[in-house]
Image 1 (cartoon, one colour):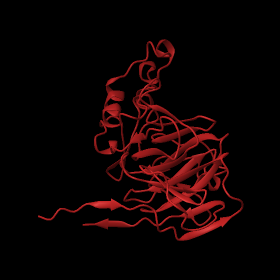
Image 2 (cartoon, rainbow, N blue to C red):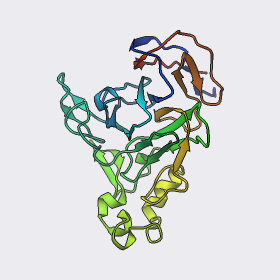
Image 3 (cartoon, rainbow, N blue to C red):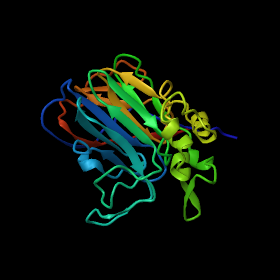
Image 4 (cartoon, rainbow, N blue to C red):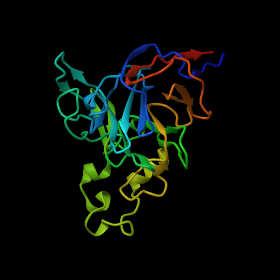
Length: 283
C-alpha cells in the first residue's frame, strides 16, 4: 500500500498583497496567523485595533499577517461554527466575543488561547484554563533567548470527558474546563486554593496536560507553560504540529523556523494584511 503524507512548503507564494505605509521597524512584532484546520475559522483578537478590528475569517489553508507594537498585550483564539450576515452580525458555536465579526469582548469559553505580553522581553503562552476548542501553537521566529514553541497540537475534542464536552449537532465542538463546569474552588484556584502551594493539578487538568504538555492546564501551571523571547516575530497556527516548519516575512526577508532567514524575494513591504497561499503536496 502506498504511503501518503502532506508537506507544508516554505511560504514562497505570497500573492495577494494589500499594503501601504512604512517599513517595519524593530519596535513592531509581526504576527502570522495560519489556519491549517480542515474547517473555516474566524480568528479573534483582543484588544484588536492592530488586528483588523479583532475579527476576520480564514478558510482552510489561508493566513493573515499583522503588525503590533511592542507595548501590545492581548489574546488570540479561534471561533468555530460561525454564521455572519453581510453586515457582520452573527453567532459562533465556540469562542464567541459578541455578536459581530469584529470582537467586542473576551471569548466565550471554551476556547484555546494564545496570550502575549510584548516588551523588551516578550512573554507568551497557550492556555487551556478556559477550555479547548481547536489545536493551537505559538512559534517564535528569528528571536533571541529561549524562544520555545508553546501550544497544544492534540485535538482534545476527541478525548474530552463527557462531563466537560460541548456538543453541537451531535458532535463535540469544545471541551470545557473543570472550573467552568463545576465552579468549585479546587478547580478554579480560588479561596483556600488561591495560591500555588494549595492549588494543585486535578484529574481534569492532568488530562489536559498529558495531551498538551506545553500549555497551561490550570491557573498556576507556570513552570512548563510560559515562555520568553526577545525581538521575535510569531506564527500562530491552528491545527498544526508544534514541530511543523513555519515562516514569517519582515524587513524584506522571509524567516522560517529552523533557518537563519532568506534573502528578499518581493522588495519593500509596508504595514498591512496579506493573504498567504500555502501549497500542500502529497506523495
